[in-house]
Length: 429
Image (cartoon, rainbow, N blue to C red; front, side, top):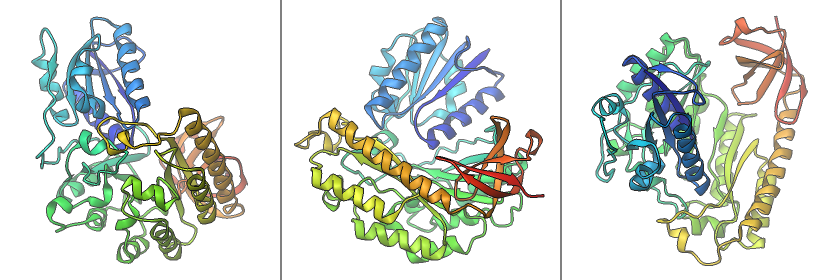
């Protein structure tokens, strides 16, 4: 039996797909490319934006066209939010949503004729589903340590699609880190839907620093990279703990969404630009040269031209290393869906384009700081005749003098050039 996989959306989804893939392989399924004919297609969906829903439907349709007799399993946020809609799509045999993914093999085995909606309610869900992924195939592994969100930002559907907060126990984190070390990973990315709420469901008996500490003494794992962080939860104590830990990567994705206090308030983001800027300052004071990256939404309902200008000015002033820009996507069921003064799509696209342009300028400026320095790079894969990898600040580096046999090694590289989105360097012997 052959199985193929497609993942839409975030790093958490990628982790969940890999865990399901390992369960399927352990049950005897051979993995093939999604564009090949398979007996089972698993589509792990995203619903953050309307585009995510559309792409999910397109991938389901593509799988059905590839093999009309195949069983198509749909998991993830879109299926959790709209299971009946997904189940009605041609070819879909099983819908499992954002939980019970650990039962995918059993659900498939009991699936005979017809279609099955196995999506259950997430309300009142308190158990962390301990999916395990150990064979991602590259040199960087992800470890999901947290699930769910209780923030209810006015634009976001994810609390409804992912459910309440649940955390992996520190003991289980340690166990998984040891497994990843055995598989040769030198860098682990700790991810979650709302990472800084780790431990809140345990009455804060543990927090994110306790999760990070589980890597202590595991010498094979040299880097711990963190997923998205929330500024209102970033404290001096937390930053101090990060700066004193030699394994912590000096790249922090500090969620922003807008550089206008008026827009942030309507988004229910629970911080303002002054708080955000102070968080940036704390990180830079504790770890000079660290990279601050972020997300920004363009065209939130009611965003005036003045507020848009405030966002542009704020981004330029704090000099972020990289920006991910998203035009606002209206999601039914959120508070922002019914807000007045919805911005036309063309205007949202224009504003997103301007922000992307600013982000590219800032990234080029940030990369210039590395010229003439020696950086430690984790080599990953061949690319255009060179090996490429990443610094701990998540700057991509193309390395002369390295070969494919060095994939997975941490090497020193003299940075000679800075291109638009990467660095070029020479291996230091």
